[in-house]
Image (cartoon, rainbow, N blue to C red; front, side, top):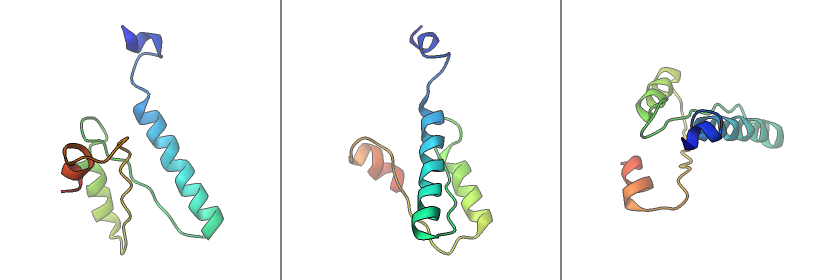
Length: 82
């Protein structure tokens, strides 16, 4: 299968976690901000609901959402933000 060629599974979660880690480090270094990132996927683990539960537990005072869809459309970013 195609996934066997690239290591046995989709690299999306690995890449997304790497982006989240780099974003955290960059904001901490450049702006001296106490930042925590949360990853939530629409169709696979960790699901968006899991990320929202972690956010609720952390009792945040502010939240910035960064959708990583390649484009904005009502069927992707729009429906996820609802």
